[in-house]
Amino acid sequence: MFESMTAALTREVYEETGLKITSIQGEDTQITTAGDQRTFSVQCIKPFATYQTLRGPVDSFGVYFICTAEGTLLDAGDDTKAPHWIGINDLKRRVQTQSFCVSPSQKERLLTTKKNTANGNIKLIL
Image (cartoon, rainbow, N blue to C red; front, top):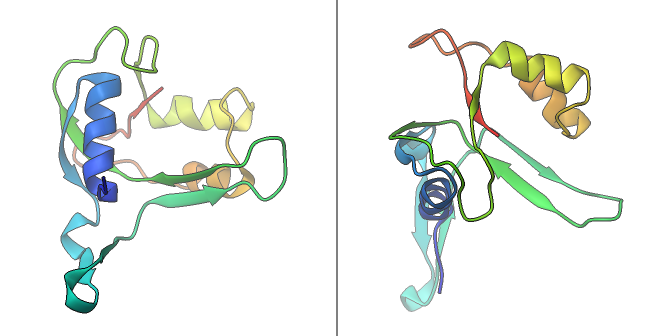
C-alpha cells in the first residue's frame, strides 16, 4: 500500500503521541503528479530538513517537517516512551552538548532555527 509523506507523518505523529496534526509547513505548495495512464503518482514537498547516513553502522534516511498539532500527549505511543515537549533553547543546549544526537547539518539547521512568532517558542516531541 502506498502512502504520501504527509499522510504518513500525520499517522505516525498520532500513533506515537496522540496528537492530531492541524497543519504542515509547506503543504500548501506541494505538487502531486500522475504518470502515464495514471499508473503511478509522485508527491513533491519541501521539508524542513532531511538527512542520510553516508557511512556508519546504521543505514538511515530521515525527513523533518515543521507542524502544528493539537490534543493531549499519550503516556506512551507505539514506539515511544513518555513523549514530552521541550523548548527551542533546551533543544539548542542538548544539540550543543550532544545529549541529542543529530548530524552536523541537522545541528546547524536546529541551532539557527528562529522562534515561532505565534507563541514565542518552537517545541519538539522527544
